[in-house]
Amino acid sequence: MSAGKRKKDRADVCCRAFPAVADIPSARACKKFLGENVFYATIVAVTCEVKAWCYHVCMKEVPCLAAAFGQTLRTHREQGGLTQRELAARIGSVTSYIRFLEYGQKMPTLGTFHLLCAALTVDPHEFMAAYLQAMYRMRAAQAPELQA
Image 1: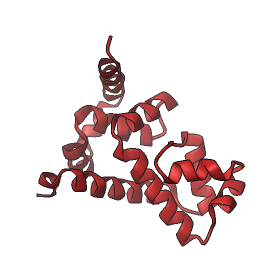
Image 2 (image 1 turned 135 degrees about the vertical axis):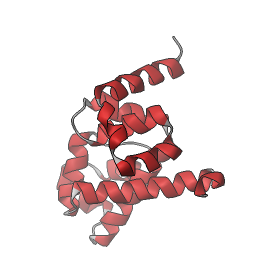
Image 3 (image 1 turned 90 degrees about the horizontal axis):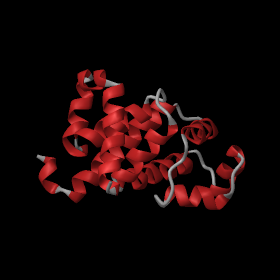
Image 4 (image 1 turned 30 degrees about the horizontal axis):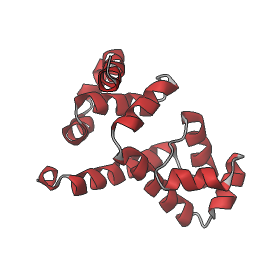
């Protein structure tokens, strides 16, 4: 089985697990630029009601997801007046991990995501809203026809 087929199958499992996601009005707009399977996997992962592997599946499927997360993390860190070193210390990590996150080279686990939000004193939902906006801007820049 090819890697692409495995990714699609894993995303389909997520879709079947949470079929009601399609009924969320704001979610329909996101689906337009993410594509159906990746869209469902992304929404499901963010709900924190799914296993961690589903979260990582969707992050690997759309390259701009990690970059958008990093951009959002950096913005919130700078708004909070923290250095990478200070943020790393607050979550019990190392500076290089924060740097990898901010450059879109790594994605945090759901547990680490919540630690980051607590350290930044940002509501996870607020962070995710900013993250989705950053992701949309990146996707729109990659495909100008989606801006219409």
